Image 1 (cartoon, helix red, strand yellow):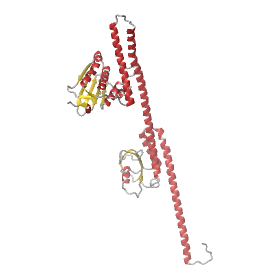
Image 2 (tube, helix red, strand yellow):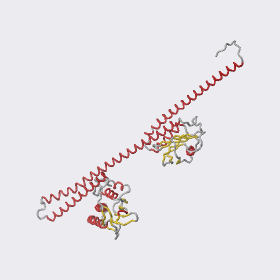
Image 3 (cartoon, helix red, strand yellow):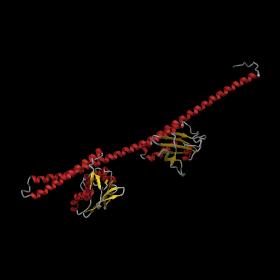
Length: 451
């Protein structure tokens, strides 16, 4: 409203005009303040976005810097602290319902560092300001970093958590606020993604190593099998040709009988090899071998297995001893498979024990542990590193072309699998140059109570 300059104005009219302009000034000032606040908010959001982008860019460079997950955590915290300008930071991982373990931290210097955090009903996002009451979860989180102002994020999917802390509320020129959720959750998700990626890479490398090892073992097995099959086949063909062609003439009957025995032994050895291969094939394909279980006398099966091994043992100058209690309860199991286990183990003991050595097979009942069968020898033994290889399918301690003892490397794995199919345990203890002891434990429910 315009008033001519030469017009007289009353006092009341002047007051009205002043009130009008005062209201206009106040309104204009409020608009300016709102505009400044909006500009400040836009500036903070832009700065947060730039910080997140810079943090992500620097963090993903870690993928090519190291393969160690522990190193990634420490390097990632350094990047977070440098980009967010906070005083302390820590990564945590949930270990129980309310318990977190501190995996990495930065900013504590010589102070005693925290290792665990108990936080009931952990929030996905949380922050403190000067107005935040010191109750859960603020009390637990500020106590962890020993700082009054904290920013927290938790990813339930990966079980990882990240916490940042400041000594003063204006440490980054402003207090923590809801908009910081994007910043801390972005940093946490990048860390979880990198850790997952590195774990996947580690699993793939381990799988490749296992596949390479399996291929090498199978190649070694095939080479070994060709040697094992060629030797008895050559013997069968050679001795049968002598008999067929009557090379020794009509008076060679005794020699023919000897050659027929060699043919029988070679055929038996071939059958044993084929049976081992079939057993292993069933175990790998179906996970088990059918057991024909019945109650039987353990002593009788042990005696037959020892008799099978005795001729070769005596030929090598080995002593074979047994220690069997007079009153053993019957065993409910597959007698053919139990005999196969004992025969294989005794054969191994004979094979790897030098002349003059000793083999002892003992059995006893252990309280609450069932039947124990132990086969000990004074043979060449194995190192702790060689035992797992000997228990693996196709595993052999020596190279097929340089080893002194024949075999496909299937005996021990099959024995172990058969014992475990009966619900038992199979343990190997060995010392190079002193010998090997194989211990079999069959559970108490396999023993048949005496009538």
